[in-house]
Amino acid sequence: MTSRGQTRLAYALLLMTGGLWLTGAAQAKTINVAAGHSIQAAIDLAVKGDVVIVAEGTYKERLDFKGKAITVQSTAPTNKTVVAATIIDGDKLGSVVVFKSSEKAASALKGFTLTNGTGDSVPGAAALTFGGGVYCYNASAPTLAYNLISKNTSSCGAGVYCNNSSPILTHNTISDNKTPGGYPALGGGVFCDQGSSPALTYNTISRNFATGGGGVSCDHNSSPTLTHNTISANVADYGGGVSSGGGSNPTISGNTISGNSSAGGGGGVYCNNCSPILTGNAISANEAAGFPGAGGGVSCYYSSPTLTSNVISGNTAKSGGGGVYCNSSSPNLTNNTIAGNSAANGPLATYGGGVDCYASSSPILTNNTLSGNSATHGGGVYCEYLSSPILKNTIVAFSSMGGGLDVFVDAAHPCYPAVTYCDFYSNTGGEYLNWPSQTGQKGNLSKNPLFANVAKRDYHEKSKGGRWNVATKTWVVDTVQSPCIDGGDKTSPFALELAPNGGRINMGAYGNTAQASKSAPVAPLGGLQVSAAAAPVSGGGVQLSVNLSSAASVEVTIINLAGRAVAGLPASDLPEGVSTLLWSGKSATGLRVPAGTYLARLTARTEDGDQCQALATVTVRR
Image (cartoon, rainbow, N blue to C red; front, side, top):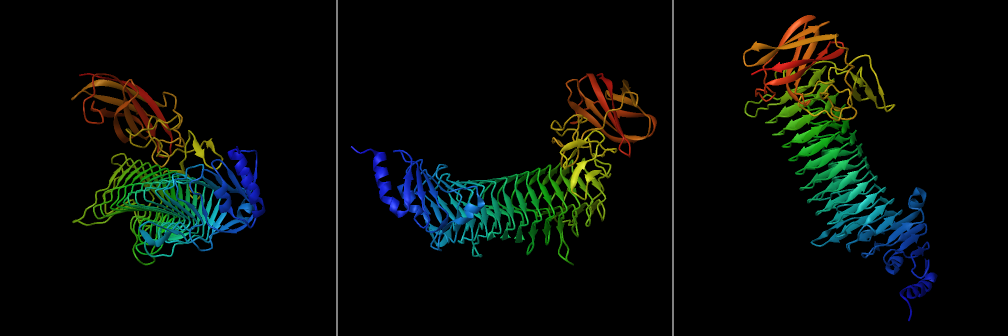
């Protein structure tokens, strides 16, 4: 009886004259394809675990993996010269490569140029074509690596199309693909549709064009993961770099999203009816150039994205939201740097150089740095039509036009921004426009944040205790101390800040991160003399006697013996010598604290940044 391996080997011998041959033992594992012969014939021959290796050359054919767990690759998939010389040309007859039979990760395509595809149709949409380069339909998770997917066209997903599929795309270049315009025309580079969740890592997605999502588009409850990709120079009517809508919630982290352009909105990222998560991305030099031209960096419509630790810089919008635009949206922004963005429209008014809040938008901005942004109204932040953003532990500084915070006056549709523990400083046009100044109230300052290097957009705060140097990746010591260090809300978490951290979060983008500037060294006890006693004050309060060697601003934090802050006194400007401060004996929530022993930590800061601390024992009696 002839074995399965012997049968395959005999069949392979018959194919050798046709440009295919098997190498290996009876369980043949490698099928070689010579130039000018058929890759599909090798796929048809292969079985699970086989590797098809294709010689350099141009192959005018379309490939269908037919559900097989095999690898099809060029002779050197990571060599760009080999990839450019190993071409699968779809000859405008449909999708170049098809995965439509539940292929998983073991179905892999590596190291080819895929070009001249025009896409296939999907059931129920015969008039449209999808996936000019790669078409994934009901494919679980095929792998595409080190391919150049270029110069393909289709109605949607000109480069790669995913429908109920979650392919793994890594180290590919997806460029110069184009949808014809009009509607739907989504995803010039990649289109994720109908519950698809592909994983895209270390890809370059550039110079693609679509109506929505020039680089990547997500729709119909699709939630891809985009990590460490470069998404640049793509063009769309909306979402030049990335577009997300229809209940899709992509996770977008560690990407460079730059130089993309949209006519309508979201030069970098566009969100509509979705809640994506954006973490640690560099979103820069994108443009929302046409009408309505909102959101050069990020544009949000009816969405609540989460933006954490992104650098959103140098973006422009024609009408509003040079950095971030919110329309009926309430994104949560934490630890972001939003700098050097502008809303610029010639002689016409523009709004929100850093952040534009419109139509019942109430974003939450915690520990962000907004610097050097520009607009006619609201160089830093603009509010209009029932929008009430919340700003905490945030720095808004050096807006070149339009002021720090500008609130549109409309009695029928009022806005009520909330600003606490923020520093508004040197914003051209004023710190607060059409809104009462918040300086000196609720922990707010108007002092130079002493950034490391504004010209180079390094917004780490100068510190006598240590500042992270981004160029040398080392800690350096400055001769001055930023007033924003240890200046945030006393109740905000600070545990991620390296010691010495003063037991309190810094203002700005690096607060409660490992790159937070350190507190100044604590002066020996005697530089600041403190005594406290439970004087017979009405309500069981405590009177603190403070002795200063020079005039300073003094803050007091009351700590229980477990080390937890229970109350605090706002900063008070005190003269040299002895002054008194009164603590009511109540917690931050307004309730009386239990009788017992507490510690009062006093932090004194002078105008030039000198700082010292001292502790005093406090006894509360009831």
